[in-house]
Image 1 (cartoon, rainbow, N blue to C red):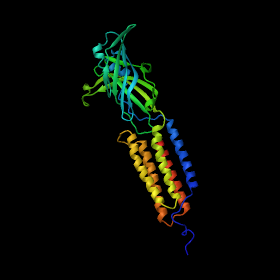
Image 2 (cartoon, rainbow, N blue to C red):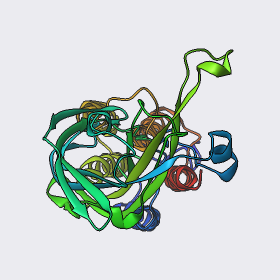
Image 3 (cartoon, one colour):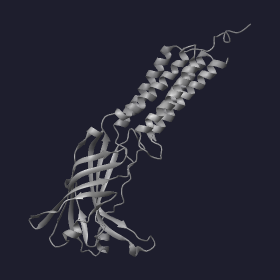
Image 4 (cartoon, rainbow, N blue to C red):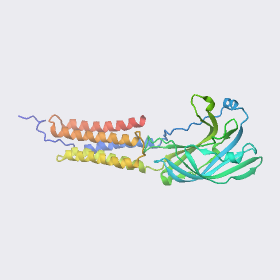
Amino acid sequence: MPTKSTQETRPLVVSPLYQTILIIISFTCLSLAFYKQFNIFHFLDARPNIRTVTPQIYAESGGFASVIRVGLEIGDFEVFNMTENKFTFNGIVWFQFTPGIISLDTLEQFRFSRGEVLKRSEPDIQLIDDKILVRYLVKVQFTAPLDHSFFPLDDHRVYLMLAHPFIAIGEIIFDASISDFITKKNVADVGWNEVNQQVEPGFSQAKISENDPRTTRNYPAVLFAIDYERYGIRHFLTIILPLLLIFYISFFSLCIKESNISLAIVAVTALISYRFVIDRMSPDVGYFMFSDYYFFIFLGGVLAVFLLNMINEYSTLLTTLHLKIAIACIHLVVVAFVAYLFLY
């Protein structure tokens, strides 16, 4: 005579109340983890190669270099695209120096690293006390070494280096301070908000041969940096909410007796299909981003629910208690992986 355990109808079901309680608990844990990340400014953007002019380097360069004060004002961005790493701005570059240390023909040959000066006005020259102030209206297009590993929770430090490769630091040294760097404070209309600025004067190097130090040329440069954080959570919600929704709905396939495997298959298919939507929103990079990890974590969770449905359908060893424990474990593993991703 069959025992009570084998008399249970197949497949087994779990009450919607139990599922809802677990979903509320895991959603609360995930929300706390995501909220914590929103309050952290994190970036991995590579800093361009600029070195500080130390007293030793100054002495080795002859010790007679003249100082030119450099400033940059960014009036507005015509193009501000973090995803495609494209920037174009209109602004003012100015130099202040003692008369006679450099000609204007040489001075106006300044460059922007990883950028191009699309327009450069005639110099506006003004004598202030015993210094010459020269201003250039410029339109600059540039790219920055952005790292999107934290997308869609990424913040960025955008670097822009002004350099003069036709002057040696034995002749001229650039100097600048944070007060010499003025930017448009708000680019919230394109989803970003400026939070900080940095200015670092120094020098960069141009090498013709790695084996012959005589071919190395040190030239003055100033590194301007702007910290940007995402304004709002639209990108994040657009990516994470559908993943969460599909993941949680898949659990309710264990609450019905009919077509539970079909519902689990639909959840897997929907999640894989949404991957194409995520790809269209994401930066085109060759490394894994947080959005990729989110997708694979929730895909693993949905596949685990599908396998649990298969076992529930055909195995006679699975009891309702086992089923509840397995469901709780899937929630726990997903939350643990997301938490580990943030800690890592």
